[in-house]
Image: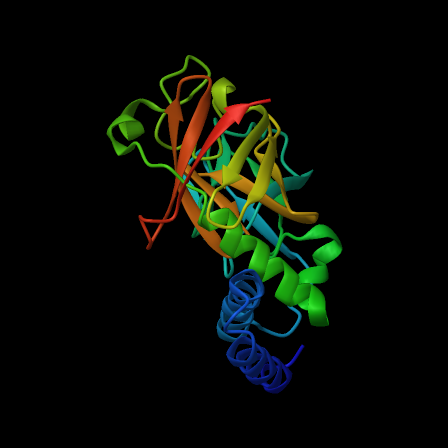
Length: 246
């Protein structure tokens, strides 16, 4: 959906809101939809290219970094060195770079940051639905920033370079609830850092990296809280959610 079409839809909904002043329920629904369209107009972009393939090599057992143009979930597509490439030990990644060490060399695949099912958030009305779902997801949070330094206090954590590490307490199925939008939110997180989110029937994909949760283009801090965790949207600390294990 182009920006011009989105703006036309905004105007239509605004007029509907004015004609439904006496019906507060309808007004609330239309206003929420209008907010979603406004967000869509601000973040919509045309389809991105296919996933990036980056070759990165450590020579003479030296540490080396290779820049990432647009960050996303990274996997080792093919090892091309005799020395082992072990994630968290001889290679890993963050928002800006892939790093390798101890003579690891390989081809790495970087997924795009748009992680809805089959990348359908780039297509027409699905773009609006995905952005609206992201807005709901962001609005559900609850913050507990004091535990950030200890969130990765685990024997399987290999140190500050192991940015893709996912602690055991973050792995599993979790649920949250958006009071403001009356919407249930669920997250499924695997031990390799992949995330699947479901918001009112819309499925979004993301990943865990560098102590953050990425869902589409929205980033969240993650803090352990009991048997679940809290997320806080980066750049908008009022947008928070508490997740409990299902």
